Length: 172
Image: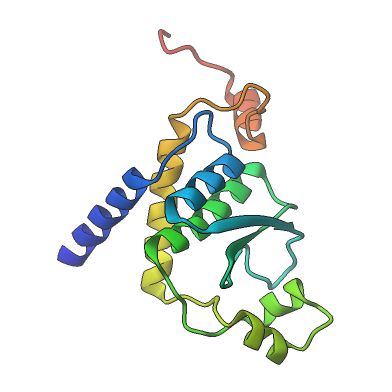
């Protein structure tokens, strides 16, 4: 129980310490986090394939690279992105292993052994994954309270739910 409270406290403090640009957009949030950490973050959209991780964080000497799938909903992309940012904010370093499925997606023409030597870090412990999920959710809550860009359309899920249930006014 005590560990859960410590985890929540740490994640809330981390979420509260990160600058949140308004209106909220993932690219401007990545820039704000990069400035906050003093390290460049590059966003890399990739096609998602069966058996591959949803998102991936690669760290080099010069920058952090967040790979996220383009063939999923905007809401899912945003959560994956925030989960990978959470790994950065938590200072997770992984186990030094890389998943074979990830190597096929990232560099399909190279051997998995070579890619493992180049990338060197992508697998996290269960505790690190739990912490990243919690922090990503707390950041998403903060982002949801911020104005969205005027041109931003609501996520498909919101549009579908609105069609199904209709729009309800608060004074109803």
